[in-house]
Length: 260
Image: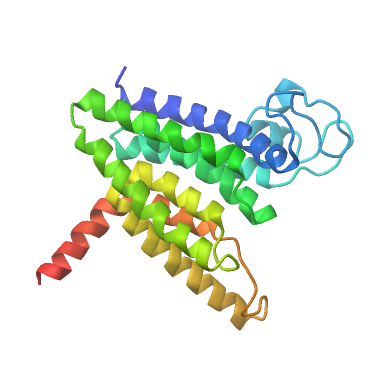
């Protein structure tokens, strides 16, 4: 069962399939629609999408990016989200040597949630409670499963510390400066802290760095003013991904610099 090619193939298929679900959540959650019923439908003509047209990536290519019923163009975002989901699942697998490890479970949950909330935040400038609130206890339960399986409860303690590191500072900023930081950002950061533990600090660094540079670039281009708001969720997500895949290397680099 630990054949790396089999593990990679399963993760790729699972990631693509969940990417299709991610698209459903991205469209329906902000509109208050059910995630389960009705089945997939065209947002324009509202007619159901046949299962063979709904195969991740392949359906979009075969339809040449247009609805079979009304001919309306299908947003490039649908295949993009599916591709990103598959790629992130493969990246998590590569991180663990394409071997089935219980540590992958909270990480796969995290990359899935990050995809969903990032695209919703880009569209609506909200991080919906409907996604993030159930994700927090689920992530904590999965981390506890990892700790119990490995017989190392320090994993759970580090997870709780990461949650505090992630949630408390941004929660205070949201209370003190509500126009600059949303409580949804604090909840998202708390969630990623549960999975990342102390590496949440690395995520913070890259989130604020990329967010600040993007804001400065947009102001320089005249695309936004000093009081304009940009969604911070995607930057928190980007920082969390950097911390997930490169957190250990960044920490070792930092320790080496301090040691000198």
